[in-house]
Amino acid sequence: MPVATEIFFLRARDHARRPPAAATADATLREVVGRMATEKASAVVVVDGERRPAGIVTERDIVRRATFAAPAEQPVGDLMSYPVRCIREDEHLFIAIARMRRLGHRHMPVIDGEGRLAGILDLHDAMAQAASDMVSAIDDLTRDDSDDGLREIKAAQVRVADTLFDRNVAVGDIQATLSHVNNDIYARLLERNMAAMEDEGLGAAPAGFAMIIMGSGGRHENFLTPDQDYGFVIEDGAQAPGEDADGWFAALAERLSRDLDAVGLPYCDGGVMATNPQWRKTLAGWREQVDTWCRRARTDPLLDFDIFFDFRLGWGDARLAAALRGHVTERTAGNGPFLRELHGAGRDHGTALRRFGRFATERSDPAHRGKVNLKLLGILPLVQAARLFALRDGVAETGTRERLAAAHASGVLNDAEHDDLAAARQTICRLLLGRQLLDFRAGAPVSNFVDPKALTPRRKRELREALRAIERMRTRMGVEFGGDVL
Image (tube, rainbow, N blue to C red):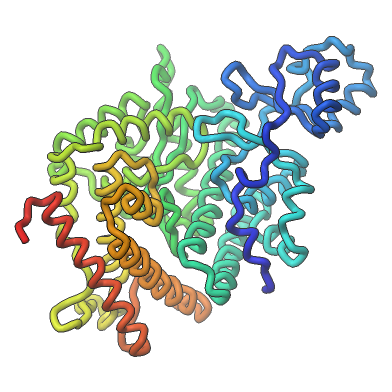
């Protein structure tokens, strides 16, 4: 499939109109029409007092209202279309194009990390960024919200990744593309089930909330077959007398996890899903949980709780996710005892490199005997190191590339260390993704295992050098966080 690959890496923020035309709900129709004429805007976003989008008025709305002779002094809040679909400014442009084409929208407000209006996208302008041969690829990633439609998106997602891989696109960019598509599926299934619950008489959400994506999805580092890692952050004060708010959210999570599994995002074996009350809390509950982790990381009964610290907003109230991130940053920055415990919990996760340059291969599982688990023994140790640096230094970024870049910018990593680790990540992730794509094409089970015997001598050397770079960093982490002596 010929693809103009650049479209997959453009961000919504880079192509949004700034400043966007905006008005409050009490502005009159006359004022809004005047603003559209003055600012040469084809749409005006209606915002609340904190500049968060509440609705939208387009040229089509104006024409339709004029047909019915709406008074010029009528408040625009009476005429706007709502609720309004938005896209975050850090999302990829192709996701916005896909949503607008699917929904039949010509405009889409762009919001910042706090949910405030930051710009507006015009479909015609956005499509001008995509070559003609890109339209079919975008449509493949659109489809409808049925299970069949979303399964088709998962298949198209792999085809796009295959094309990008063949064109030698940086593997981190391919992973980000996979993650954006998967996170969009989360959001679409969440909205589908919320609407179904309301139609069934179960009511709308009893409180505002945010869905957060954790693990590789939160880092934007998905491979082909990620499982579910998500939770709910519910606004405080959600529990009203006689109202089982948590029961509503539990029911939503059960439906969401069921549907995610049905379309190709399987249940998490570790239970990191909002179906588990441990991952479904109010903001105050999450703050308390973070405080507990920061007091006693090693003794916490939850498995893989460290992936929580990679969370990012997947859907919903951006203020809740931002407030939680702020609390995490405040509680972990410079928190030596917690960081030592977190490092100790993961220090057994070494690399696949053994003495004399040999690789640690699987011995007990017949299906993968003689192969190396590059996720467990390659990527995971690097992810953990970058996470520890970020938490210690108050860096809110969640991606490994971004965390390493922040450590480099602050002087924590020198030029050689940063370059070696960035190259190590590229090498290991490319080997793993390439193997997964080959397995997918062949109809074989997709896994995290790579056979070192199948690698060329050059690839083996590159893998050894990558693992050595991570081992050097593990040694340093042991000194800085574990009290080791060189």
